[in-house]
Length: 258
Image (cartoon, rainbow, N blue to C red):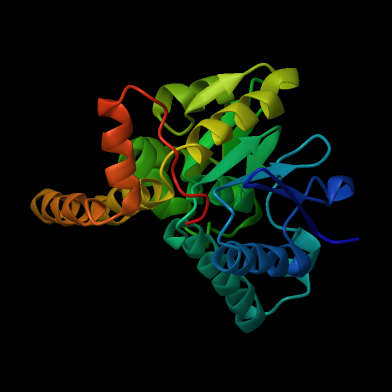
């Protein structure tokens, strides 16, 4: 069985983590599947939005410890570097990625969710970086993204204690965009994805670049970068169509591909 199963509907690509018997824990096959996901979205220009979700009772419970028990320092570095680069690829893709967190998002699972552009969580979801409980530390961006998303002190606490937090607390901390009832998760994520998919693909890509890349700059440089992208957006057919449609009081017809 494929570790990640892909399904496409109306410009929305579903990537389903498919190791339910292991709570979708990350092994070599999952890493390869995430690399394939990045490559797939880059190649298939009709993909407007990506949704990552876990099959079964978990989003992703972290790394498969059996895999790391077989690993020495060099092998572990190679695996975590491949995972880290795949997650960095998420941020560089033109299409936004939504994490639909339907259960545990721990360790590498939390890192995967944080690399997505939006996180919609079931009320039964839990987040955390519990690596310290087995004598290691996060290695695919956990300490860095978590600190930037929820603040240095709280990130330090979670990484030092290995504690889990509920979806509700994650929402209060700004880690999660929205918490919904467990049986409404897929419906809610599909609704949000469809809203985004109807927007100008050019503008969606530029927004993602402005936020993700600008956030890593100082404020002054980030604003200058935003201004450049704003000017660039005027060169697109979508900009002309969007403004014309607004003046004519009709729904804009944006192009279908990125």
